[in-house]
Length: 456
Ligand code: HEM
Ligand code: HEM
Ligand SMILES: [Fe+2]
Image (cartoon, rainbow, N blue to C red; front, side):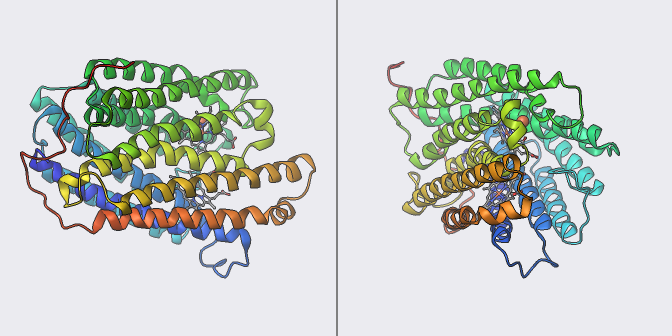
């Protein structure tokens, strides 16, 4: 690394990677419950394992975002962080909040508002940690006087993500009102401002890994962010079809959310053309796999599989079924888990003795996760199609339908096990090298030589 304070990012990544492992344990536990019998029914029922699975996901992904920001901002602004101490205080607060919240769930302490189940003290701790984080990053940039476009997009995304968490602090007793505002956080996060965060990291990685012309890349980034907002904001209405709000939301939701994949096509093309331009000059091919992989998998999981159930005429059958889980997994994994792993893979050779080009274990982790997640997506999809047909079209009861589709849950557990081995390999590959958190001028993690002549 080029700046001493970038080493804080390592500890954020270490926490994120460890929590990723914990998330998978609870995912596997949730999946096995579909098959039954469930010996843990009264200790750890499905609702508890699922809430821990999804909340730990959010905690580790945001922890990864924070670490990646602490890595990227000094690099882009060419300065040390404003305060290393604040960064560590923030990490401790984040970990304590995460662990306490998970323990709380074991004792059924939560608000029940899906994905925002955190009790109020945890929510307040999240707000404080976020404020410390934004202050530290803001002051770093201010002190340096250098503010690049990828940084701007990243910070815009992080700041807006914090603002959009505010509706989650309120409790609404009317279910329709509660769900109406819940999507301001959840939808506008994953289909709005988190895409800015992903876009910021993607631009940074592509510029560094491909050596493509910064100005061209930055112009594309503006176009992508513009497209995200044009479609994403009113696209929120694809969650308002059946929740008790006026019916004019149906055409609005169908039309605008169907436009959302356009930005994701833009993002995948962006990654592809950057690679074409550079001729893949950078030695860290493993980071390149994760970077391009994230852009392409987002197009598949969020773009294609989101579009598959976003029209009201389809969603009236599929709403809240395993079709939702199919899309939720592929989208979240492709967009946010993979971009965090891309940043980790890019920065890791600076923190440890991992070879710059990656290791066979690292590539195996990548391919096993990809194959496993693809298989899981197909398992959820086939189970979901069966569920929709039996339950919604034939009118079969929920539990009877679940029994009929059990074969797909066997397939889910097999493919999820492949995925889990991929995650375990990623974790081992992360921790197995000795640390060397010193500044090195010969660090290979620096911009590569100028791009070759453009081919596009
Ligand atoms: C990276 C981007 C995305 C992520 C991470 C994501 C993730 C998710 C998740 C986790 C859910 C379930 C939420 C819940 O029920 O609480 C969901 C629901 C949904 N998503 Fe996405 N999504 C993304 C992009 C998209 C896009 C681009 C579309 C449309 C083209 C879309 C369409 C939908 C629809 C229609 C639902 C509601 C499903 C239902 O009615 O049960 N999503 N998404
Ligand atoms: C071994 C791997 C995994 C297994 C076995 C697994 C299993 C499950 C199961 C059984 C559910 C509950 C679905 C339902 O409500 O019926 C679930 C929900 C969910 N999981 Fe996973 N999961 C795994 C990995 C992941 C990963 C890597 C991500 C994201 C990066 C993820 C994101 C989600 C999300 C967003 C939901 C909520 C979806 C919804 O409410 O529709 N999971 N998972
Ligand atoms: Fe949405």
